[in-house]
Length: 406
Image 1: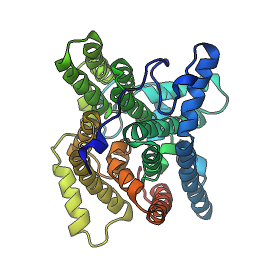
Image 2 (image 1 turned 90 degrees about the vertical axis):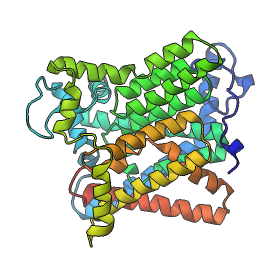
Image 3 (image 1 turned 135 degrees about the vertical axis):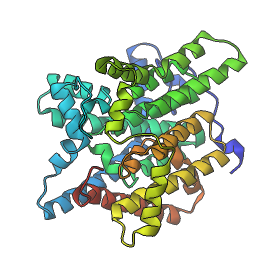
């Protein structure tokens, strides 16, 4: 692909609060309440095809899960709202964080970042229903915010069709069901996508604020912070600005604040990393990843289907990153996905959730989306249909057959 295909278009006007979104006509950005309504309505109309397609993909997955769960006499709501990591977040919302490190493996809830359980607790206090239902509702709402952000990035770089296709591909990932579970992936992806969009459109302080929130949501928030900080610091070569320097400092503030707070709470500077060691999440430079890849691909004659899916996802992510680099994607996207891959592949922790950990890395799908924009309608239809049906099957298998966490 020619390098010009990957260059961002010029930054749009800044007349809308917090910046514009693709598809907002200048004539519609009038002042006052009517102008504010137009600012919201126009970008929603522009993103509507992507959001409707996203809903269709995820509802297909939900239907497959419901039918399979009914045959196995399982309830759908507990699977989505109150199992595995969702249960940990609900425990934090109910009882707060541990005060001591302890010695038990996989037992210290300080490993889980605070923004999502804080939101669950706050929203549940103002709405009817259980905290589990609230957490699930937050994830679903945030998944649409994330899909909108994914579309905004793709549309800004390569046009509306590419944005829609990128959104559909993100929705149809094999672990896409997690987007509608009581997990943090949807919230985190929303922050990451809009932070990257803000960087691409020249709004460093908005990008840094969103990166700081991402850093309070997941450990991999450091990848969003790195993208914003590196871009802001490099922009200083064109001339010093306080905005760029402030953005570079603000972007990692959320991640640093939580890691520092854990250290203070436990009375040791490496408190957060000590907690991670109790969760077997030591950094080993990828030795464990290579060992598990070799085990699944060469040593195990009948590997578990879910582990095969995780392995294929990791290998595909590496190949897609090489394509992204060859396509000369904008630096913020390459930094974000590069750091995300480095964290996921370099960890010595558990292997099976790593496909989920890569879920926010939607820029990796840009080469596929661009290829589909140039493909025939028949090929595009067949490819997307297979992806959606495969995602529906993998999602249901992940939570109904696979015996551990997604």
